[in-house]
Length: 118
Image (cartoon, rainbow, N blue to C red):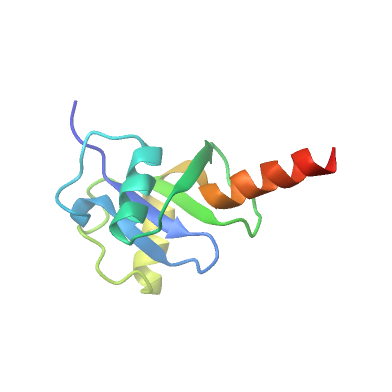
């Protein structure tokens, strides 16, 4: 099985935040969730949880739109704010879904608050 190249577009900014063609080495045999976790680990995002859905939620939630890239997008994408690069990804790559991200501490805190209210 060959490694899959993923491109992650940040939901809030609309910019390309990561391209696994050049993310701490070449693309790896990993899932989209693993690619997001690897990217966030590379930027020191801390302890986070991830959940993927197979469609665009059309929301302002924290997370990434995940695309599977093929040879039509030059590798690696080195300017995530370039409109032409973003459009190329959106038009020529397969949309796999959306990965929600959340701080694990926030999830634990929310759970504690719910338990206290009961």
